[in-house]
Image (spheres, helix red, strand yellow):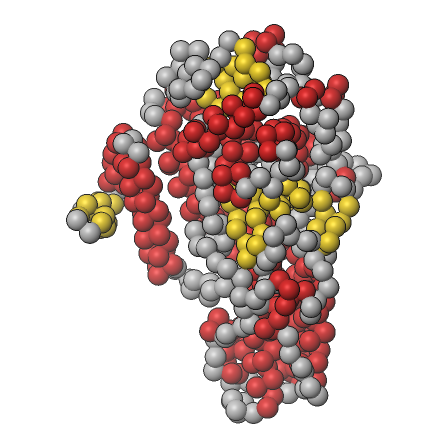
Length: 531
C-alpha cells in the first residue's frame, strides 16, 4: 500500500478554509478537528479476521476511511493510516481444522483476497497492515504492564482485564459496568466480575499457542488492536474508526486497556460508520440510523449468513468503481441498504459522467483522465474573474468542500458533483460545442478549466482516478492478474522469511494449479503462465 504525505501544512490550509468537523462517538457531538500534533494525523481502522473470503460489508470501512485520508491530505495534513489484520482467532483455528491446513496458510490466502478487493475498489491509501501474529512480544508486554498496574489479573493461565478498576469503562457505548457481559463458559467462573474480558487465553493443549509468562496461550481479540495501534501510532492518536457493531465490546475494551496501560486517552476522535444491510428489513423504525444501538445495528448488518459472499463475481459484474461510488453515496454514519437495484442506480449515475467525459474528449481533444488537477485545497483556490462558467464552478467547489468539512459528508458532496455535470452539459449546449469546435477558443478553454476542477474534487473521493476498461477488459484483466500474483509472491516471501515454509509452498502450489509458475532467481521471484 502506498504511503503519501500532505503537500501543504495544516496551518496554511486552516487560514483559507473553515475547520473540519468530526462526529465523535464518545462525546456524541460534532467537534472541530484539531490533531494532537499537527500537521500529523494518525488513523487506525479495525480490519478483518481473515478466515474466509471478504464480502461487500468488509469494504465499507476501508472505502470510507480511504476517502477520509484523501480529504485530510488534500486539506494539508500528513496522515498515517493503519488497518490491522487479525490472523489468529477461534474462527481461524476452526477453519484450519475443517480444511486440514495450517492456520497461517488460511490467513495468507484470505489476506490476499482482502487486499485484491481493496485494490479493485481503489483503496490504496493504507500505510500499515500489521498482523497480530507478528506482534506477540508487544502484546505480552502490554499485558504485563496492565498486571503490574493492578488493572489485570491471571487465573490458571488466563489473564483478564478488571473492568471495576477503570472508572471510565462504559463511556463510549454509554453502558454501566453492571450492564457489561464478558465471555461465558469456563472463563466466567474465573473472573472477578462478569464484565471482565480476556487479555490472554490459556492454550489448553492446543497446537496454536505462544509462550508467555502465564504459560502457552494466545491473545484475546481486543488486546491485539491496542498493542498494534500503540506500536505504530503511540499512546494517543487522532482517529479510531470501525463499524458501529464494534463499539461494544471491542472498542470499549480497547479504550479501557489502552487508557489504563498508558495513563492517557487512547484516541481523541472515535468515528463509527453505519453498517450494510441486505434490504430494508431490520432497520430501526422511527429512529435515526445514526442513533441506533450497536445491538440493533449488528442484528441487521449484512453477513455471510444473510447471503453475502466473495466479491470477485460482484466486481466483475459491477466494477470496483461502481461499488465504491455506491458506498460513498450515503453519509458514513447512516445505514447502507445493499441490493442489486442500488448498484444498478450507482452504475446509471456513473454512466452520466462517462458520457460527459466522452463528449469532453471530442470537443477538447483531451482526456479528462489526463488533466492535472490541484493536489491540495490551497493549490486549488482560484479567482474565476468574469468567466461565467468558472464563477458557477467556484460556487459549486465551495459547496463540495463545505459538505466534506461537515463530518465528511460524501453523500452531499456527490450531490454537488451532479450540479457540476448539469453546468457542463448546459454550457456545451449553449455554446454549441462539438467535435468540430475550435479547440483554442475561449469557450473550450473554460470547459477544460472547469473539467480540471471536477477532476480535483472527484480525486478526493477516489473516483474517476483512471479510465474504465473498455469492453472485453483484456488489458485490465492482465494488469489485475499481474498485481494479484505479485501480491502473493510478496506474501510467500514474508512466509518464508518467518520460516513458515508450509505456507510458502502452499502459495506456490496453488498458483501452479491455476496455471501460474513462479520463477525463483537471484534477483527475486518472477512468474509466467505454465502450459
